[in-house]
Amino acid sequence: MNSKVLFLLIGLLVGGLAGWLTRPEAAEISILGMKVEVQSDRVASSDQGGLTTGQAQHIAICAAIGALLGFGAGFVADRRR
Image (cartoon, rainbow, N blue to C red; front, side):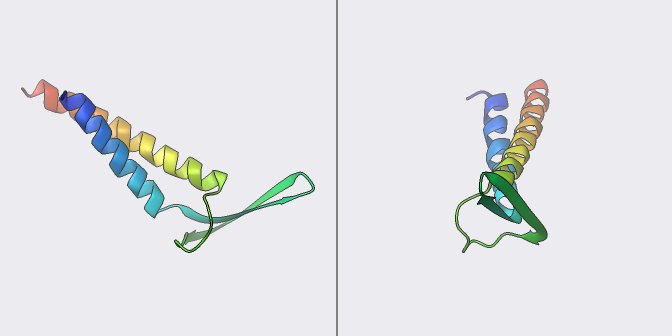
């Protein structure tokens, strides 16, 4: 497998895991078509329900950053060969 692709996948997984572990605690309430989202500074616990939109965006952003870093590391590893 190409080192760029390998490092991209590793970065994506590590970034996604980091995003999952550091996702903010959030509550999203929908009343009469109006959505209200409340967040705190604490990390979310695992006993809550599904992900809110803000949490999913947080995980996606962390995964994208990890993928970019991994892809860059793949370029560096490929240049050293």
